[in-house]
Each structure stands twice: as structure tokens, then as C-alpha cells.
Amino acid sequence: MLLQSGTVYSPNLFVIVDYNHFKVCHELDCLYFRLLSKLVKLRRGVALVRPEDRKAVENIYSDKISQWRKRKRMFKELWDAITENSDLKEFKEALGIENDEDLGVILHSFSDLLQHGKKRARGQ
Image (cartoon, rainbow, N blue to C red; front, side):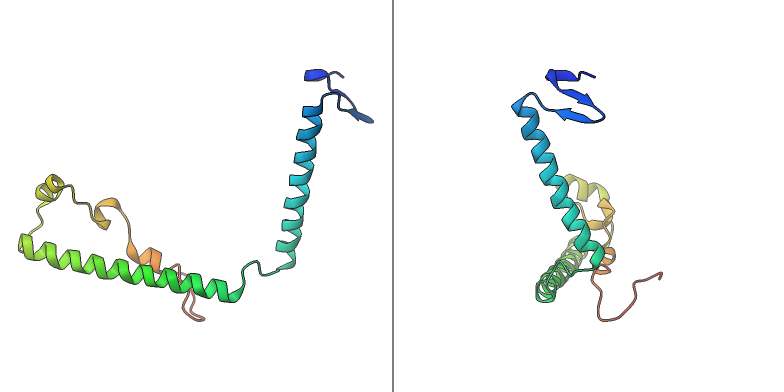
């Protein structure tokens, strides 16, 4: 059987006539073996992230979530003082202000991503 670009294929023989095809096949083989080695590691249950790195990332994430809460609370207090606790959607739109609720973002869902100790996630 003759494929495109002069590549000949038969069930028993695969001949690459063009150097570019050889290069592509070599790259695919390398990718295949790299992914296969990752899969073997994952199946063995090897920890891919060191515990101290995970802890550092969790601390940064926790810090960013608390900053988000503080800023959200500060904005709400300021907005309530300006609008005297009345919801002025037109005024907000005219100023171009969008808050989390307007965009459908729920802070609680992001804070649930952090597991504190041995607690189970909600609904489990």
C-alpha cells in the first residue's frame, strides 16, 4: 500500500522514504515513551509533589483567599456606606462595577478547595 509522500506501508514492513517522516516518527516515539514513564509513576502511586512544596502552595493559596475575603468585605462596607444600603444596579452599571455575585463567582467554592486537616469535603 502506498501512502502520501512516498511512504510505503505493509503489515510486515514500514519503510520511511522521507527524512521529515522519520523525524516525526522519532518525536512521536519519544513522546510515547515519556508519557508511558509518567503513567507508570502514576500507577505506582509515587508522590509527584514534595510535601513541603505542597504546603508552601497551600499557604500561598490560603493567603490569597483571605485577602480576597478582606477586599470583598471592605468593598461591601464602602459600597453600603455610599449607597446607604440600597441596591442601585443602574448606578453600579454606570460606574462599571461588577462584584462576585454579578459574575456568578462564589468565594466559598474556592475556599473549599483547601482541605484543612483530615476534614472531609462537603457532601461526601
